[in-house]
Amino acid sequence: KVGVRQRGCNGLSYTLEYAKIKGKFDEQVQQDGVKVFIDSKAQLTLLGTEMDFVESNLSSEFVFNNPNIKGTCGCGESFSV
Image 1 (cartoon, rainbow, N blue to C red):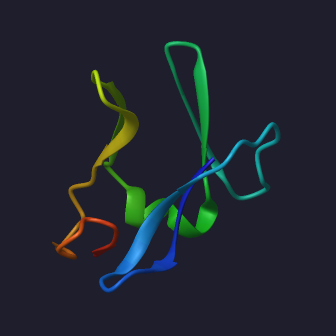
Image 2: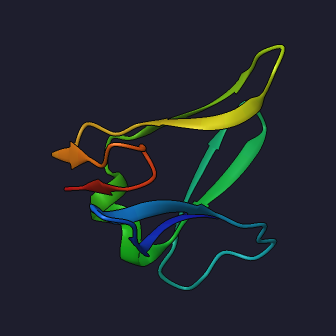
């Protein structure tokens, strides 16, 4: 389940958690057999966002490309919309 929470110097950060059941107002997106729930409170913030899983020799992580972001903090931990 993907969401956002208040955090960091710029206000928001992404959250990821395992969820087997969709919440009453959550959205469900499915691609290539993978089901992702989007927290109802985060839907406007995440509208149009692309999420990808990137692997390199040193790390593996989810990367978000969010067209709604207006600014980020210097360390990249939080963003504002």
